[in-house]
Amino acid sequence: MTATVTAPRRRAVISKRAVLPWVFLAPGLLLALVFKFLPMGKGIWLSFFKVRPFLGDQWVGLDNYTRVLTDHRFQDAIGHTLLLGFGQSVGAIVVGFLLALLLEGQARSLKIMRTAVFLPVVTATAVVGEMWRLLYYPTSDGLINHGLSFLGLGPVQYLDNPGTALWATMVMSIWMIAPYNMVIILAGLAGVDRTLYEAAAMDGVSLWQRLRYVTLPAIRPALGIVLTLAAIRGLRVFTEVYVLTGGGPAGSTEVWMTRAYTLGFTRNDIGGASAASVVLLSVTLLLTVTVNYFRKRGDVR
Amino acid sequence: MSAPAIEPVRTPAPSAATGKAAASRRATPARFDTALGWSDRPGVSWALRILLCATALGVFAAPFLTILSGAFTAHASGSSLSFLPHDSTLQNFEVAGERGIWDYFTNSLVIAGGALLLQLAVSVLAAYALARHRFRGQALILTLFMLTMMLPEEVIAIPLSLVLGHVPVVGLDLKGTAWGVILPLGAWGFSVMLLTEFMKDIPTEIEEAARLDGVGEFRMLWQVVLPLCKPALGVAGVLGFVMIWDQYLLPLVASKDPTDYTVTVALSILRTDPEVGSGVVLAGAVIALIPSLIVYLLLQRSLVTGIAAGATKG
Image (cartoon, rainbow over all chains, first blue to last red):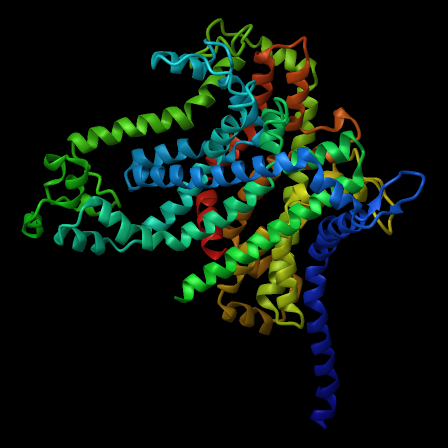
């Protein structure tokens, strides 16, 4: 008797429990679908079309891709993007590591220091851009040039000189990312077994050896993640360049996304811009997968 | 103090490389607290550290002082920046106000508030399902949310602007509205992952006890699970805010005309305005900086734990 009563009720409970997670997931999935995956799909779709408002889109096959990949401004942008992405990733890790080594510790004064040094990370990129634009003021009484004059170095036209603009952008990016890396590396440093340092001192190893064989292996997992994030972030660099130089002077800081943006919004070539975006997306995903693959293999070993 | 007993016989490592034997020969425990073996007593290594700290402060924090002083300086320009304002005045803020900076600031606050609430609500709901329920396709959903993290906003910006102009099925035009910026920020994989990981660690006994008392699913989430998630909510909130306030391309492509801009995007309007000087741009920059500063100083600990946790969980 009890069996016949409980059986249907239990089935009802099961189906209700099966539906419930989806109720909770619905808002997130819906938003992700409409505002992330739909645009992605649409971007891939449009990259095969010549987009003509009001006239209807025209299928052009791989035309957009060949046009983008043979466009010499895009080709220049590849070099700039790679240089900027690689330079700022490596630079930010080196600077972040040095900062972490310098500011490691429990003292209150060090905590305050870390708080102050971390400021660039929470500041919006656009604000940072305006700030550095003024720090880089090209005349000899601009702030950085003024500092350089004490070292006997002449005024540098940081952002107005095609030879220095990309490097100036890179320095600003490193300044923004390095404190973020510092926090991650500090978390790694905190996990290093203190007795290892003591043992190393007993064995009389040099400071360099201690860093190389005790500290670095301990923070390597953290560093791997930092590098992955930085490399991906580096390739899609847009805002930093857009607010600081706008791609100029003479296209010397034009990166992949600023070029795509110009193509899409000022030249109204949606198809070409979509193709450029799809290329970047593929490279980004490929890079992520590859880095993760090597990271996993490294962990296993 | 029996500490000297463990003093190593040989010259300690840090001194060998930095050449400051005297400073670190003492067997202070502090020597083993840091990777570089900094000493906490006055000495050469101590002095060197202070010098380096001052340099770091000069590089990473002092630029903020220059924009602050520039914003309060009359007729400020790139060639007259210093760390302290001279000729201090509020004129820059008045001019920035005339150019509508407070309207842009309001846009920013509305967007940041709305997007943050939506982001947290969406993440909590999704995380609850992912962490406390088992269902078919769980791994797939998890991957999908991970993908939203890997999909750079920049890459989908161009087609996204088309979608915002005509949202499928409902056919709404969200361009020029705050929703156009808020809704795309709603599903953020990072915050979903963070909360999922956190909720997984909550012991199931609490939930089972509540379930026996006949507590329904939504009350369970709201009254049992959510209060336990406060630390994670703080982390997701502060990181979400920083991420939202940093948005540049999204408000740009979601706008119909410049009055829809957020304060960060509007800085470029001030800069290209030939009638206003650098001081006004800096005043705008200071206004755009203040909310991040407040959030950061209040929720600093959450931010730092969040970054460290996010990084180790990948």
